[in-house]
Length: 386
Ligand SMILES: *Cc1c(COP(=O)(O)O)cnc(C)c1O
Image (cartoon, rainbow, N blue to C red; front, top):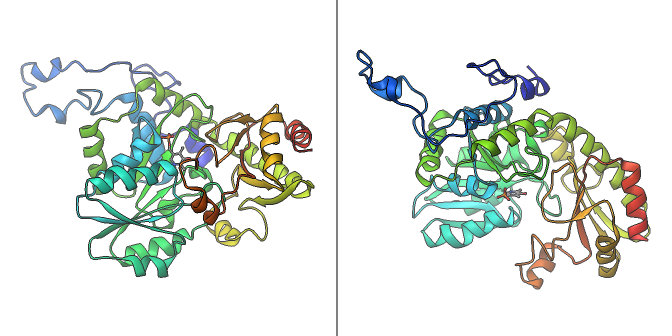
């Protein structure tokens, strides 16, 4: 079946116990183990009852985890209390003394995890400005275990060639982890391009309504899945049943939301390109955007996130103060259009000289297109920019 169908019919579309079409919220911490103790039932309990304690498993979470695995084309999925806890739990499969190759412009929270806690615990990493087969090969060490990348990147939407990088990693005997938050499985399926683990901040497009914090990890193989499950169960950063319900509910409309938001993003790009106060627009769907061809070969669309740079810092800050429809806020992927200001938000902790080197200017704004009417957004943005 195609993805649109799988979003609705994914093995959890009808509750086995009641026939409910809605995903039941099993708001419980524990499960009655009485049947294990009935006469004649004295065999290892795990063989008969799937659930015993909600940290180890919950039917509402299972519905979301199975749906996520199916959508990404993986063997197993896991739901966490946030995107960063999904990423931390994936990194938890490595050991002190291991080494990871990461892209320099992965999500700031991922970078912070690697650069502080995991470094302190002995998991070393090298951050690469450009990730490609040559730089990967030049960075490999005997103890390198994984490549960690994200494409398109934030906030300049830089593209990394997933097929080529995953192949180089595989050749070197290391696994590839891809943060697929910006694309969603609807537009990009890294496991099919050679990756081993996909992670998501489900807070963004998967949940889609700016009302829940959640993370997802999906593995290509059962073996990798078991390693992540062991971390999930040991560290316990699981997603609660109500939040699982919200993300599963969001998933059902992923296709219509992402397609509409992507169409609006294209309209906005067109508008920004023509505006006299805009100096540059960054969007993987733009001809001439570095990597646009690679992106088109690995993804089904350019997505709903774009960035633009005004001619002066004052114009960018005035835009944020004057727009009435875009919320000046952190995050993306919700039904509301969001305008983020990287130098005060996602990249505030980076020293100015380093920010300049990365091209993250105080005149740069990132837009996540929402579900408002594109004409209204353009009218509002024109007023705010002018
Ligand atoms: C937001 C985000 C994260 C972190 O997810 P949280 O749900 O905020 O913990 C990770 N990666 C990317 C690309 C993100 O945008």
